Image 1 (cartoon, rainbow, N blue to C red):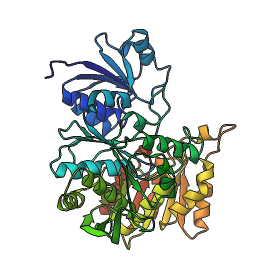
Image 2 (cartoon, one colour):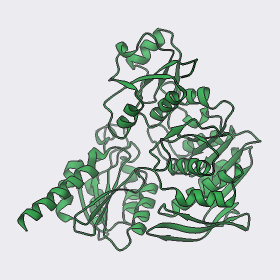
Image 3 (tube, helix red, strand yellow):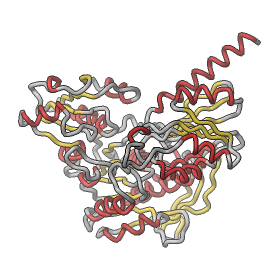
Image 4 (cartoon, helix red, strand yellow):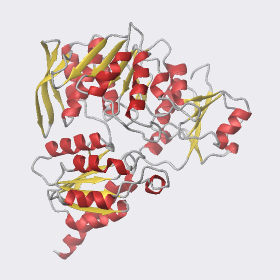
Length: 482
């Protein structure tokens, strides 16, 4: 145990970055306490496995007397009673990104993976490529990697790979988290309008990523997806050398995916580095977007001196991240798949990936507009186009419908109208208020061979589990009457 063991109290400890930070502190030998609203698997299981006592809710009395430092998750507002009590007691208070930088990034080479889409997968894949090559990176991933033992590790090598979220840092700092990580390598996967509760428009999003690029030192490096015009536009703020990657070959990319073949087992392609064949790649991940993610990880691997063979082995053995086309089960010939997709672009690429992975089978796309951005009325046409790649579509009412429909707000997406628009395109459709209603309406329409792709950035009311249970009950009832 560390001789300098300290006690950290994490407010809103169950956040997707807060829990991995807690694990880093425990790994180092610190004592960690925290609080949150009710937590659910896998986060509740992971925190319990760390031996961390989580106090329910937020109350000043939760804060023990022997705390050395308080870390505040960005879901805690300025009036959070524990935050108020910590400030009144004069305790050191910091955000998650500030704590990560201060406690773990000194003397390391932070590799920050940022962008509207693909951050979690690219972060996990990059960490895996380095780890499988024996480079022992540190990492912090805002998801559950299949191959790595946990979403975070201190590591012993120079690289520390971090998922660089553009969402707000804390109650006091509404800027993106990645500005705090002192990136020496900055990976930019994509730039689109998202997080409408924080950014007014696309130019505001571009400005945030421009600031991230600008803080990379001249002796650092930037890895950028050249097929995205918004990414190319913001590169003007960079002073560090830029390595570009892409699939189109139209923008003079340094790393090009050539001869891409997509099938039910993933993708095969050649990686061409500045005009010369570097390696023949195979990935288990579905979709062209994951080919791009593999190129980004390849670029980072090259920057850290990995051989072509080491990179190829890492790409081919990576099995992905939970809730990215994650197979949840098959009952009665119906396969249920879960994905985090919520932005129209991500929904479209996920539907396409599922279509290729389950070629020849009827695909139901079941979508919950969970986030503030996803639930906006002005995204209706984008979601209509994104979901049109499925054979059939089921849509839930936006999770924040009441908030979005307030006077002066942007208005809430009309799930019924979206279903009707897709029906006019010849799609079988349905809509319902919530997961329970969707399962009830969907179950009679499902036949053996169907694939149900659930997409939400939240828990979706346990939709996948509910559907699998309903399918099992249907099978049991059928067997009793046979």
